[in-house]
Amino acid sequence: MSFKEVKELRQQGKLKEALELAKSDLDQNLGDIWNKRSIAWVHYDYLKLAVENNDFNEVKSKLDDTIALQLPGSEVMVFDTIAFQLGKLIFAMVKNNSINTDNLNKLFECVKQMHFTKPSDGYSFLHKAFLKASGGWERYCDFADWWDFNNFQLVDYEEQEYNSKTMMSTVEQAYIHYAKDLTIGKFVTNDDPLGFAKREIDTDRVAAFLGQLDDLIQKHPSYIYPPYYKSKLLLLNGSKEQALTEFLPFAKLKKNDFWVWDLMAEIYKDEKDKCLASYCKAISCKIPGSFLVKTRQKFAEFLINHQYFDEARYEIDRLTTDREANGWRIPNKVLTWKQSDWYLKSEKVKSNKDFYNAHFVLAESLLFNNDPEVKVVITNLNQEKKIANYSIDKSNGGFFNYQGLIEKIDIGDIVNIRVQSVDDESGFTKVNTVRKNVDNKHPMLRIEEGVIRIKDEANFGFLGNTFVDPTIIGKYHLLDGQNINALSLLSFNKKKNEWGWKVIGKIE
Image (cartoon, rainbow, N blue to C red; front, side, top):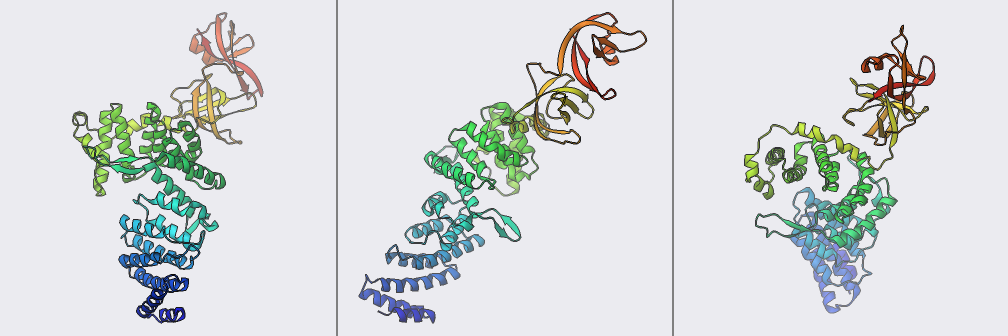
């Protein structure tokens, strides 16, 4: 046996001689583990050179030679070392933009037959490389299942620093990529006469991965994006209410990102007004048009289905322009729309901005539908500034800007508000939603009937002990001694520093 001599030849760079000697030893005793180790390391040296030269065919050849040795499962050292070389090769291919899925598939088939230390630095590095290269590769989920996410090391869960920027952890990236591939599904066939590609969702795999994703979210609540993808997967499995519940906390954090509203539109796809509002909000986000082409296409389909043909034509024209500007292919579905009768007969509008503005106000309120409401009564209005004062009771109240939250509001209206925050010093309240309350009952309001008393020398009056100010008298042309039904509000008199009732309206 010439193990020592083979090693010396390798160290001297005499790989041809080392290979010939190692082959001679192996031919004499095919089952000897030392002979197999000896030639495996020679194959490794050749593989390392092939990686340095970006010679994929030579790399593949040496992988095949090493696998053919059928080393036992305990022989991990050479494979752990190979893992780093394969990672380097794949990262170089990514950097040089020379990745192709056939080569990834070939490497995957090779590594599945190798024995690695799990977990280990080499094994994690191998995963990082495949993850980096897997954009457009349909087998990442297969690779991840083989690699097994249980083999991540503690360091893989930590955020990374790259070029002085903080990057999300490898683990978060991996779970996101896996979930994203599940939502896209696998390509099945393209036999549609219009050329529309068909994909199939693996519902069993979705259900299995949801458990893993939920466990990650519970253990790592600082990860921002997994809840978003969990919601998408729940939606695929038909769990709309659960998807919404999981999604809302994330959506509130990312409400200025268009893709949040894109998913909200998916969640509410069967509710026209909410779906429309969500698409309008998505398109209204400040983002380059090139990012919106897929959202515009989905929005256009929604508009077509609901016969908003002029608006649909604008979205189609806009996404076509953005795709052409970037040299991207126009989808067959879009080309088909542009040849349809409704498209040719529709009006070519300059912009859908007014259409967006008319509908997207509803969208943000959707984020807070699960938040508790507070029942308040409107006590004062500044219609020019769109400011409404409100009271909950004698001890609690404030004011808020109601523009965009409710179309019409009056003093004495009872409304339900969802509060985001309150400035304790000023009383300004950031309100997320406002809606009219239907029961019209509040302890700060009462209805009373009686005879109004107006003093001759004054322009104010009283209904019992309830004050009637001059504006009410003038507005309703009230006369002394007149019997009326009135709506009264419990109000605080700053001059007298006391609470008292005042008439705010006449009930016919």
